Image 1: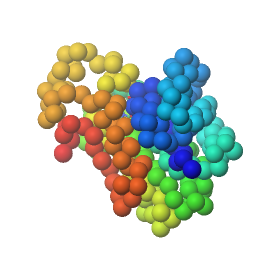
Image 2: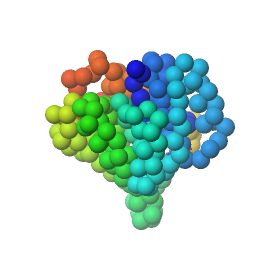
Image 3: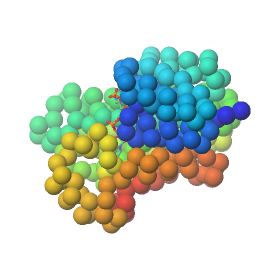
Image 4: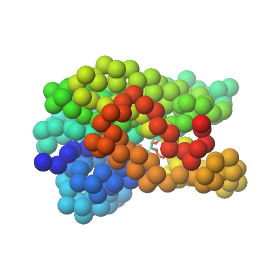
Length: 244
Ligand code: NAP
């Protein structure tokens, strides 16, 4: 029986590549999206080309009800969730002096509360199965901080605390919970940066380049696999050595 992986925010960027990489490795995929678009249908086709199933589930992770509904749909279709990847995330960057309360709250709502909302609905099924892998996409910014990102850094640091605490709570049920902390990865999220800013960032990365979505997906693949079964509560950077 194939393993089932649920990936949030998976129609583009890092989430999409994680879904494709896991599909290439034989997982049935549950793909979360917010709004139907061409990219969603293309991603679904790309996944199904690997002879695995792909269920698309609509929902906003900042809504607890949406997360419950998505989880119920997955259980009705597959009866289990082996791997959860909390990937959906947003940025609303600006200096604290200019940041509105709404800018702060919306980033926390999606990135941190969203991680809680999805995980809370998935964990009971993993507990029953006495097995599961939860992989939370944090950021090196949650470890090291970054000017202009107090909201985002707080959400990503929160994910790290959440990951470690949950790892302690449910390790005895054979469920591993880890966080992945990407550095600067080429996606729509970083597309807004000018070429000169990207060059400057790359200069300060020991491996002298921005990361690719595949760099992140390969680490997630490892954490989802049995090869990582004695690893829990960890934050693993995938950042070309940017933060050590
Ligand atoms: P991206 O290209 O902007 O994609 C983000 C994805 O999240 C999109 O599919 C988006 O769907 C989805 N999403 C946003 N809000 C959502 C919500 N409320 N409910 C459900 N889905 C939602 O970003 P990315 O670069 O791939 O980032 C993916 C994750 O990696 C994020 O958690 C991000 O913080 C983290 N990360 C990225 C980098 C980087 O350099 N790119 C570095 C460190 C960490 P819509 O199309 O509907 O908006």
